[in-house]
Every structure is written in C-alpha cells, then in structure tokens.
Image (cartoon, rainbow, N blue to C red; front, side, top):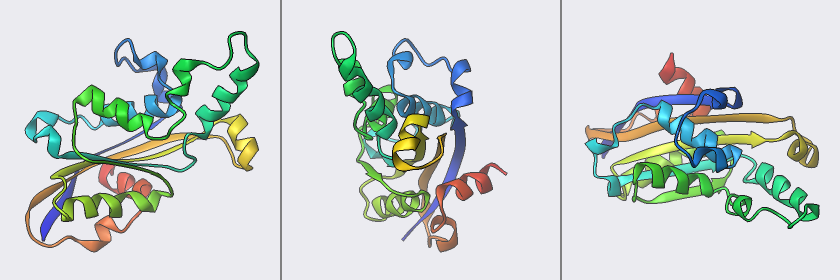
Length: 190
C-alpha cells in the first residue's frame, strides 16, 4: 500500500475574498465557488509536478448549494426572472468545475453533502484504488443568513483545503487520515 502525505493545507473565510484577485470570472462565481477556488490557490501548489489527469478533486459541502439556491429562488420575483448565470451554481459540484477549469485538472472528482470527517477517507480510497496519484480535498461550510434561517443554523462561510498525495511504498498512518478536515488543516498548518 502506498504511503500518503498531506503536502499543503489552507483555510479561507468570507473575509479573505475582498483581497482575492483571481481573474475576470472570479466576481461572477457564487460564494462557495469563490471560497473553494481561493482555498486551492492558497495551497500554493504547482500542479505541473504531477500529470493533471491523475489529480483528483474531492469536495464535501456541508449544506450543499443551499446558499446559492436561496439567492436563485429570490430572483423569481425580479424583473426578468432568476439569474441564468446564478443557475449554473445551484449544484454543489460547480466549485469542482471551477477548480478543474482554472488548473486544468482532469482526474476523477467526487462531490457530496456531508461532514468534515467524510472528505479524507474518500480521498484516501481514491488513491488506494489507483484512480489518482494526488487529491485536492475540500470541506465547504457556506450557509448564508437566509439559508441558515431555513435550516435553523447559524451563518458560516469557511472552506478548508488539503493536498493529499502518494509518497511511495509504505503503510498509511490511520490516525492522520481518519480525522476531520478542520482538525487536519489546523494540525498541518500549525
């Protein structure tokens, strides 16, 4: 079994966005896609070191695309109806697409609604099965105030990102990859 290591980690909040300069398309993205893209940028990776078709993306969105869905739904009463631009982001996987486009990553990708502890086991499984050599792992918590009212939750905007890759032949250290993304990011960045 290949040994896997975390080689980079980052975390962003909505307060990091005003200083982000990631091209002309960035301002048109929904909040979760902006934050996920910025979190990947903050990893500081050179994706040229691995074949891009062997780099996976694994994203877990705690509330799915609910914050964007609420914004889209609000547009139903607006002149001209809901925004067709915003419609593209009413799927939680939209953030994966934006990351893949920006970095030309064509490896496998997974997107699901879940908790912080769901990301690393899925990414490790992708690598163990040989479907990829590395994985961009993201845990997105994006709940707007309006979405929070719907699900009786507090407003939160945070994305944790890790880069997990094979390090050679060896054994996986279970306690490193059986933890949640937030504590893994905190431990790696410490």
